[in-house]
Length: 94
Image 1 (cartoon, rainbow, N blue to C red):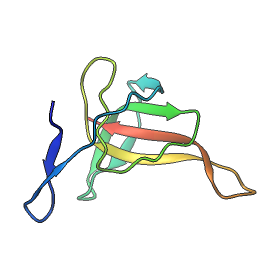
Image 2: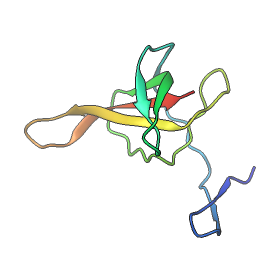
Image 3: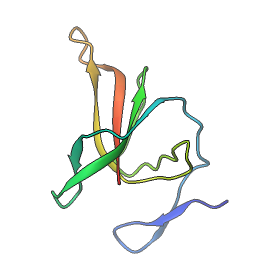
């Protein structure tokens, strides 16, 4: 498979080979997030990573049911002593 997308300047960028990352997946959350246009979007899943992971709003996650959606929210628990995250939550939109 070739993983690619168009960047904002009309050029094709290639994604690296996807990683398999273990997470707790919670479906059916009654939460919402905001997309890039500032519109309220329902979350279809919340991914909980019990360790630090680098997440970008452009990342693509494939859920256990083989569906995907845009990354809507990235949150997490921060160590107050260091300011570093040690657990991440990623909201996937509908």
